[in-house]
Image (cartoon, rainbow over the protein chains, first blue to last red):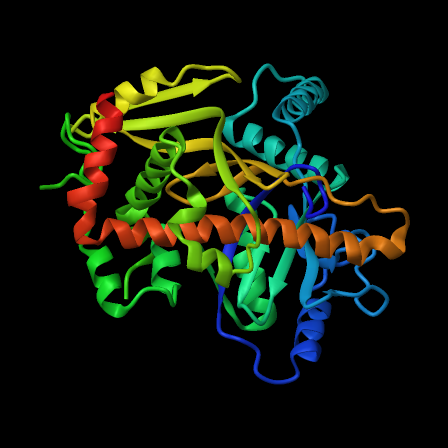
Length: 212
Length: 184
């Protein structure tokens, strides 16, 4: 689901810090160094990296821009392989039958079955093409804000890791506590007052915040 | 310095209470624009009206005091919200809601989750059509403007809610209003 889609899900972040010098060069280098590889690693279950917003399957940051007005916009691509369990079961069964017939036996040991399962899974994983998932990242460097167009937990975790690895900056997910903690609209005293608030809806008959 | 996951869980109630307060504002036709007049101006939200409506779903949660939680979901375009108010009477709070925001003639539809403030299924006002690839930057900037407008509105309201929540007036004025509405 991308920024230009008709319906989107968005997670918001504050960027802890700023790139002080050579902003464009530093971000360009971070994107290039951590761009998704074009050669599929047949052994990797997950491959991920940056790709230009306008070119999700040709991660060429020399050819495609990452600047749109005052914003930086690029995509995180996560290619994942997964083999449906029913396909694995089917191939294990075929392999077990083949081995029993070849060796003229009635049963296989537990270890033999485990080995077959591992081999079959490995083989199918290598054969299976990975499925690409693309999530757009909008970075307002000046305001130190990032919008990530997915609310999936795994995708957000990958973003946080990749962002720190690429730009040496930490992303702080915005939720009630971090919004208040990072807002200049609150004084230190007001922040302390918020920290001392407690939910008041634990007893029946009380309306929220009615904690007296 | 707080551990982030502990802080998330400890203060998620603020997001839920914020949504509950928003519901109260909507149901009582309280003019959102009057709530933070100076803030709208500062954020450049120049318009005649800012109106919220409850969309097609609302979810509430009521802690029963023994680690068990009662969950109430109301879905449907014309669903009555009486059961939601009953849950509020018992001390419940809104955890999720589908909202419609109208700023003058422009409309945003989205789901918002209290504890994380995550926005899902967001539909912005219709942006101009992209005729060719050269239009990409224009289309992106228009969409970004529309997303940011929504977040500005949410942020301003959330800040105002928190300011109210820690003020003396919360217990004297706001809670009285909310109580009267819940009991009505």
